[in-house]
Amino acid sequence: MSDERTSLASLAALFFRLGATSFGGPAAHTAMIHREVVARRKWLSEERFLDLMGAVNLIPGPNSTELAMHVGHERRGFVGLLVAGTAFIVPAMVITAAMGWAYVKYRSIPAVTGVLYGVKPVMVAVVLQAIWALAPKAAKSARLRALAAVSVGLCVAGVHELAVIVLAGLAHVGMSAPEKRADEPQKLSQIAPMLPVIALSASAQTVTLPSLFAVFAKTGAVLFGSGYVLLAFLRADLVHRLRWLTEAQLMDAIAVGQVTPGPVFTTATFIGYVLAGPWGAIVATVGIFLPAFVFVALSGPLVRRVRSSAKAAAFLDGVNVASMALMVVVAAQLARASVVDVSTAAIAVSSLALLVRFELNATWLIVAGAVLGALSSR
Image (cartoon, rainbow, N blue to C red; front, side, top):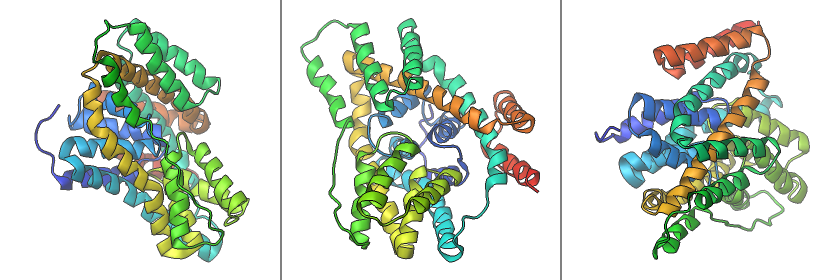
């Protein structure tokens, strides 16, 4: 791990670039962050990265964005947290707001199908390379490897991601059975702040900036899981309860969040623009991401402290291996959706070979994939 002081400009530049080029959802984003901050820059050790990855799975909000915040906090404290998180969010916010403007003006979404055809197989390779690098550190014992296999099975069976992660942590505490110490219960309780449940009320029936902020702040404060969980939350609030959007508009918004780079939570930016113009886009974006900044600021200092407790460390090891299991399941799902023919298979295999053999910068592979995808759609 590099002990050299990281400049705020370096943090901003890295995470701005990642936010502008990281397609494929949280697992792909995590893989790209790992490649940049662990493999290339040596800012974090593999073990530390796994601890942070496990920690973000225990708090609500967008996992990859929270991981970026944690890296910023590790390198430059609270200011680094703000810089890294904001830099990662802004590119996707700008792109999604532009698509919101086009949607309001032309009632259609700009075509990006061809670009994604070439980019998605590259992201499969990026995720697989990250799993290859992280798995030996996460599954470092026979019982952790067994927990990983069970976790994969539970995820495939449809058990909620958070339940799998917590159960794996608790199971590893039981399997480890360290010698009891008087201070263990107190230290294990340090994990509790990583499991916050916050509910904000949002009952307004007309679209105002405060009501828009309240709806998205509530969502950001309580949402665990994937983009499909986000869809369920937004449908319940915006379509059924408040009637601000139609089903078709909501599906268009989710599609935009899925096809643009960066965190899928910038779906809020698109919806905010559609409902209340540029200020609506800003307010909705701040609302949905603000809880993540708060949760990371509160939980960040605790991650190091839990390692001083045998039980808490065992819990975190279980969480880490379950997080890796989730990544494996997501990689399989991403591959099934992205590698659809001989061309995409060739892109995925060649990208993986270049990443493993030559440690090529993933950004260049994404650009190449986008160009190939755009050409193939002509």
